[in-house]
Length: 126
Image (cartoon, rainbow, N blue to C red):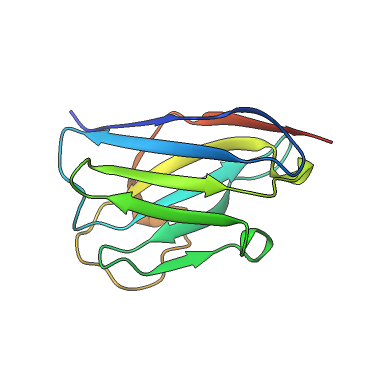
């Protein structure tokens, strides 16, 4: 059974940092793109960032320069380092894995992802 388990969420002050982790089990995702989405209060789920199987990354404009996605294939884990947090970053953050290995196209659509974690809450106070 495939599972993605996020951790590292919590409460942070504006300007602070948090590091989210997403540990995968049940299969290896080293050949799959991995991403982070988020859903803020009263908002739709939105793409935050993705890392391709080859290490290429892309980011939501509002988090560029503040957030960094990385992966450790040996640990089957993807990370999201979030710096200079803002209150508008408050959301439930979800990890997702692409259902197709070696895909190199657009990664911003949630429909690409066949595996999702349960989410971890991030609250940024002003």
